[in-house]
Length: 203
Image (tube, rainbow, N blue to C red):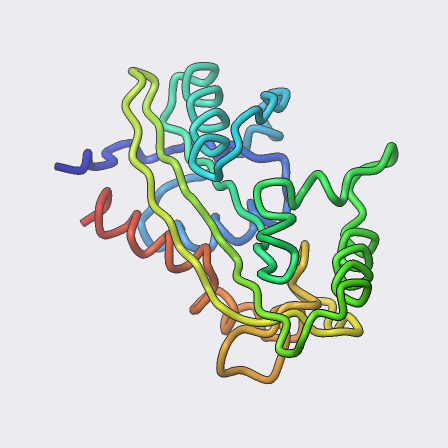
């Protein structure tokens, strides 16, 4: 039996402003106030696991214990078939620079590797999002969502964040970066995982 969320305030275990915007919009209808780990001045725990679920758990439990509130984390990334699933759980690492994250650099690297391998079209990929809702007592619930699509070049669109400008979801012509945010939210990997979270913990 999935544990229900009864608190009216949760911590979002992220410092990523794009994720905060998306998840705050998704939670708004439920009357749950969202404060981010970044707002609270928490540092980021080291993500030492090799799976999305493992890293989501690290972040959620860290924020729940530190804040005394339920905490929601999201570990997400893009899985490119021709690159044997890379960057996967290391998606954010591919964008790391001494000055912060540079996703243009990361997207350019992915395309260069696909070109180097002469990967056939369509260059299939999927976005994965794993949500972990953790309570201060150590209990947690996990929910996963995926959206299938392909990698395109050049980058298109200034909406979204991360790898959105090079990802065209299945059955669509626009990248996530070109889509109206409401259209993306309705079908994204995060939306799929979130629908499962709502059914399990809010239903």
